[in-house]
Image 1 (cartoon, one colour):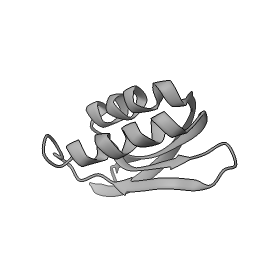
Image 2: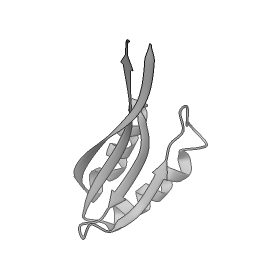
Image 3: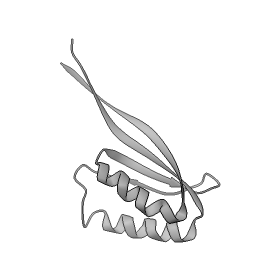
Image 4: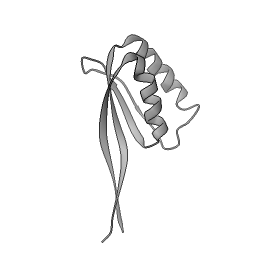
Length: 90
């Protein structure tokens, strides 16, 4: 059995008010590897990598920073790199 690790990207357009809730939802899903937040001008305003099992103390500062961005931003795009394991049999 040959196992390869792949990642796939998804993007979500959200209003500033919904930004924190969407980031929390993505982290709860548990397969996000990296999250990038861009503003309406497509400038990256925040980027962070998540490790498997990142909880509590580790994500609290991320939530605080995203909360500040949400208060200042109007429209954002969240780009999520997700773990996508593909198993192949030979």
